[in-house]
Amino acid sequence: LIPKYTVIKDASSESVARVERQVGYPVVVKPAGLAASLLVSVCYHREELEDTLKKTFKTIEKVYKKKLGRGTPKILVEQLMDGEMYSIDVYVNGRGNTYATPIVHVKTGRAIGFDDFFGYQRMTPTRLLKTHIEDANHAAVKAVKALGLRSTTAHVELMRTEKEWKIIELAPRMGGFRHEMYQLSYGINHILNDILVRVPQKPIIPKKTRGFTAVFNIYAKSEGLLVGVVGVKAVRALASFNTVEVNKVKGDELKFAKNGGSPVMEITLFNKLRSELLADIRRMEKAVVIDVAKPARRKSGSL
Image 1 (spheres, rainbow, N blue to C red):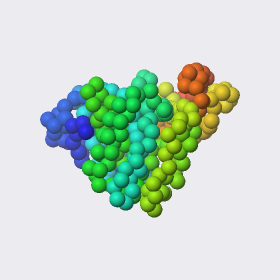
Image 2 (tube, rainbow, N blue to C red; image 1 turned 120 degrees about the horizontal axis):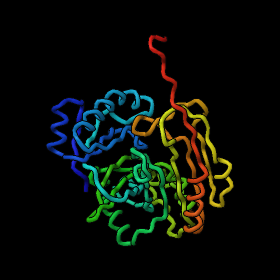
Image 3 (cartoon, one colour; image 1 turned 90 degrees about the vertical axis):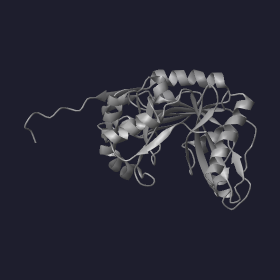
Image 4 (cartoon, helix red, strand yellow; image 1 turned 180 degrees about the vertical axis):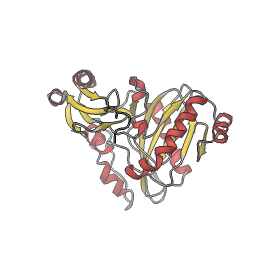
């Protein structure tokens, strides 16, 4: 169910050699207890891996503290897989009975040209065949049961490769934006269901689809200081508009997720018709412009 991986505690030559021996290139370097693709990087050769490990171990303690990371900071280095990314939240009651929620397609920043793995776009329903969804649910539930989880909601991220489904990660928590997405597209009260499985009562999962929902994490195309954001008014005017949140103000430092940064904007769109939603996504992507200035360099000898 899972790709090849190893856990490392330092950036020593011995750790690098172990990665090469047990996993092989290309690899994904990521912390075990952070969400939102924070400090996640891809490495294709030894020089990239050595540089990435040094940078990650230098900042991991600070980012864990700031973002309330789970457990002791540690780094996973795993096999980079080719395929499409999806995620499923699974309700688990006290007896181990499981209930899979609708699958969500995830487009990462890497898919749109960023050297970063942040979740750029999340969309549901998907266009997967029923048999493919059943296989994804089977893989997700199998992973949940392998960990013996009880009385919780589990967030499972998967990769659909050419041959099979692989588990990217699993955590006993609700996935980001799931309550809003499931409420809009299916009328599912995700927060209520998270409570029901702990009571325990059977969660309520309507089958009928109301429409198509897409959520976006918008990052600037370069790191630096925020000058301004253009296009918010145009986004609000879209027929598919639901919500928009601008998380940064002028002068804030902007970083990519792999360097511990968070999105500048979060946008939610909904439409009963998939074609209309796709059209508004295109309009949104053209309208939003984030203006960034490089931080001024300090002069030599200045305080």
